[in-house]
Image: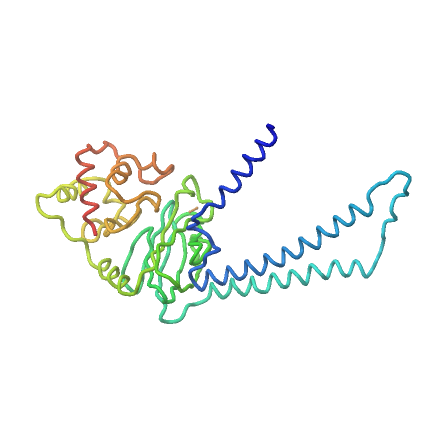
Length: 332
Ligand code: CUA
């Protein structure tokens, strides 16, 4: 009875993995890059399945035919069977060619130059967040990358510190972000949506907290986003809580690390010029709401181990933090 219970529990735990949804599955591709990887995976899966069936069948036959029986002499070993040896050397080599050629072809096809009209995005991995620059549009943003649907995108990937890996499974990646080196991927998204991804190369204490979002917008939505991002933030209304928050910001160490266009020049942390319009903070791990912003400002390392944004000394008062939150939320 305890054994039955054990197996039932094991089966329940295993089946619970089939529940979904799977926002980061490569098996639901939403771009040409994603489809290329999906085809490659399916092809190689069937090769592997064929090899598995043949090898296991031979193994089972050998186990049954040659197993020890009372009074029967040991089977005669085969030595130097030329045909057999050539066959089992050639067969895997041929299979490897069928695996290697499409793999290398896919790597080159997805790392190539996108067409001339492609949207160029420069991605820089930082411990532990993503920076996005649109060199032709004069935009710098963080953690949430916006691209238009149906248009080719050329992503140039590098790192500011250690090796990361950019990966939005439904759209493309995973491609290493290496300091001092640029890797490229190109993709064209099929469908409007909010696609999650994350760093896929161990990069320190908060590797698991280095998430990202790619927002694939309809063309008009993307153009509106570009227009907003290109402008500076609106100044908060005089006498408002946000206006007081701006004063707090200007007298805090925040401005040494963060850019707010027309307000502060820091380049160590994410650009905050339009932080109020983002859905998440802290490398995509928390929703961008008052409670999370306040806890983040008060004590970032307790929410994200190893965070370069340290506790403020002396700590800000709760009133100052509330004002700062109102200011950041006003930056749309
Ligand atoms: Cu960045 Cu892992």
